[in-house]
Length: 227
Image (tube, rainbow, N blue to C red; front, side, top):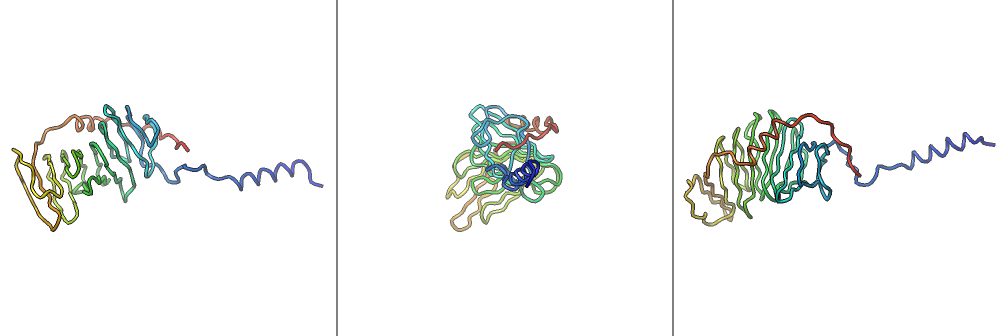
């Protein structure tokens, strides 16, 4: 005859073998931690500083919102009406930008690449790089290379955007719109055409705030994931 103690041990063993990780709990380490969040969201929930962000999660801001993320030694800053999804890459972070504007500060030997309107923007070297990428409208980007040069890829098109310049880039346009800005290149490739305009080298509000976010983000604890 088994003792009550034996029954307790058996019940505990059965409960342990039947335990499963709650559905929706990420199975990988977080990609980063939110350092600032104002009128911002992580998936469908309100975002707040200290919240961890995992692969495939969706970050968004309201019209007057702002959000900053630390990933390793690199940072992202989102302005209002911006939507991104994050994924890991070797030695860094891949950002799918679907709307709005973001600033990134990539630390030395840490890659941050931004995918927007089918174009891919990433640092030209492994040196520290700071840039702003904005979707102005469908197939129209504005890219500011504040620190370090950027590699720009779109289908068969490749160009290095030098440090200190801000470009407005029209994708798949048969004729670029009229502008007082300098037209620096226009290359055709079958059905694809990319036109670049230099539109200035000033520091915009997002860039200035992004630099502040990059320099002021600390090393606070990462919150646990919420199932």
